[in-house]
Image 1 (cartoon, helix red, strand yellow):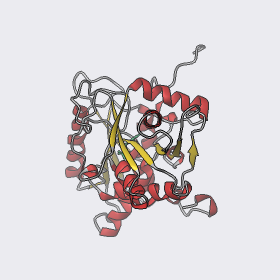
Image 2 (spheres, protein in one colour):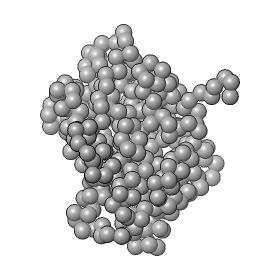
Image 3 (cartoon, rainbow, N blue to C red):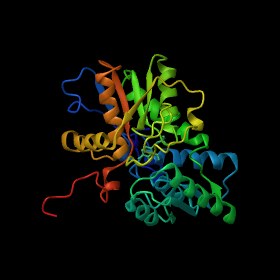
Image 4 (spheres, protein in one colour):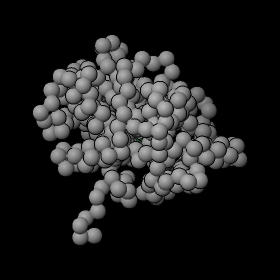
Length: 326
Ligand SMILES: Cc1ncc(COP(=O)(O)O)c(C=O)c1O
């Protein structure tokens, strides 16, 4: 969709159609290109606005979501923000259930957008700012309780097809059109795996030779079959140490790339300082993985990545260094 070409009837029509930018400063000295899809330019500052809209509109079409019914979702903040926006415009009450391990900016933003935010304590011994599989299980339990109590519709991003379809129908085809079909590889940090599954399927339909890599936190690379050495990491939005992700079942995966917190942070900082792109931890992880691929199996190729959300969502974290004068 070319959102600059018309008056949008609501902000929901301003979702998607994000720019694709070549990271030519980051790739200086390397053979090949990295093309970055600026998903932080969506209305909720993340790629998850796309899936929020797709999941809600599919549920409306199927009759599962009727006017006035409450919507509930477990979120690291981004899907919740997308749902808060879509539900505000369409008039559904929305409850976001989030771990206290996620940054507080996200909770405040959802509340400002009219959501009821339920914060769930982390698992005993968990580190603030780091959401593990155990902490996520506690959030899941709380979300289930609220759905049962209120007879709500669960906009479950781990299972609703709308998640994967948002990227299959829109993000992937946009990348293909914007790059004139020149993308040969894709790598993506997996949370639900919806972005990876949707974009990789779209790319492969256009060119079956497209190579698609799953990005995981070093220490918790369970999808690659590695033992967990540390399930805590700073790359919010994924890397939950879940071995089975519905959207990845039966999907061809050409390889796995592991990224440390330090690499993700250093690359986010390079994106900001060298490319003028202010994005979050997982965006840094995706760009870091693409740079590794250019130095390895994808030398000379054109790789697409998603820059998943905005760096503004992490001002309270150590993603950005404090000023010396602070
Ligand atoms: C910032 C961020 N990056 C990456 C992801 C992972 O995306 P997906 O769930 O499509 O695998 C998420 C998901 O919540 C996210 O919020």
